[in-house]
Length: 214
Image 1 (cartoon, rainbow, N blue to C red):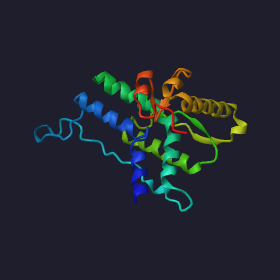
Image 2 (image 1 turned 45 degrees about the vertical axis):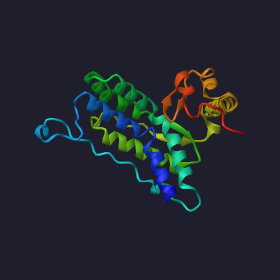
Image 3 (image 1 turned 60 degrees about the horizontal axis):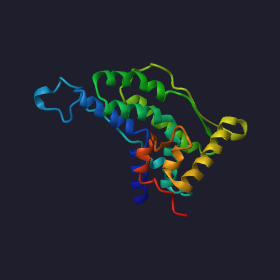
């Protein structure tokens, strides 16, 4: 039961779920949505969108810890949802009806991009596919705007890009372990943590700022 609760919490805070909350917040700030709706203006504003978190039962396997499975899937999802999350967060921080319209128009483009992943974790990738399909359906995007490109697995032996990403990840891990997140930002142009782009200020104040204990 505890593992299920932790896995659900990991998925609720994933880069796939947070854009939904940011979009709902933006609608409220722009007056496009009111929660709860007072009786005298019901019918004048849009009701809350139904929002669901995917069932974590996909991670319940006798041979593995479902918390580890959820963490792996959410880590994979960051590349799919990070641009959408950043755009939704920026729009909510600088709210306006124009920002809301731009978000509705552009977010499907970011979510529909294709991505390649190193093979070996098909269940985690299938969960990310479900998250993307649910996000496109729930956020009231224009239906049929574009067909999402594939999220596919491939062997790193056949992909110089995946090999380069593995090398970059190893360097980034070593820089973080030695001197913390701020040091990492000083060596890479862009650093994402849980789907959000870091600045030196946000990195310095983050709980993961210091190097992990050896």
